[in-house]
Length: 361
Image: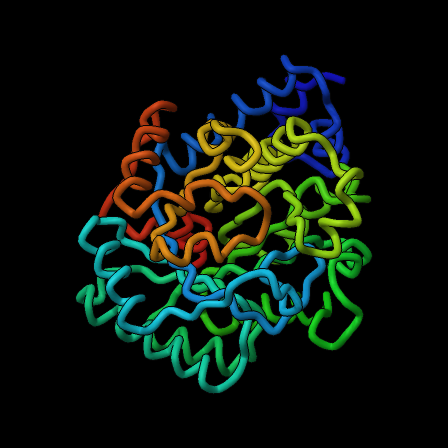
């Protein structure tokens, strides 16, 4: 296996990616990360863009087996932020020059929720003089709903495929009409049609998942012409069916972090100009996880600005980091983390995906 020969190829193929994903040599893994950072510098620069994240509600109609805010988890205290509370958070994000906000919630499709999000998006645009970029992560919706929110002012949307392997996807969800792999893919197509910069991602280190599956996830990003990617290592939640079933079957923390970093690096090397987030889940398993993610090729961070009283109620997995920090503390902490790896936080810039921008030319 000649790692350097593969890394110097203009375009990798599936077998190349599998070879790189399978390497266990610390020296070779470091070469992969070094190459990924070089590709990041060539296509993005040493720039990091913020998405101020507000988790506005943990109410969800879905019952995913892995998720801490699943519908049937009665151990979590449900909450729903008001429009005024969300706009107050958006105002903080705007005044602290993050330039972009991300709105995330459990999934709902009812008319009250659809109208509420539309009003929130319009309100964010108004209080920021149209200067805040808006990313939504609100699950599967109809094309009409996606278009309404886009027309109101949202322009990026993150909808994780969770796994491009249908069998793995099915193992994560109940067998009912609310959980369907084909529907998820159609939603990604609808988002593109509606005009969004489209984001997706997967969980890494799932039970039964192979390195070939992970490589196929990267190829899926290419096939779907994805603009931005948010993916992280799987962390179980104790109060879920998977958390109870798989407690003794998951890969150790170190291996899941390594796979997570490899996925960032190989996605950067293969796709070059997409936005890639260093996710909170990386830090959940490794105290330096997000820094390592940046050095492996990520260029997006999502500091949590959810109201402190609700942060602990929005835990999709065990031991989510930063839930005791307020927005100011989170900003200070992340600033030091970015500085420590030699990257630069770019304020007052939406940080849109270069991949998306090229399609507009």
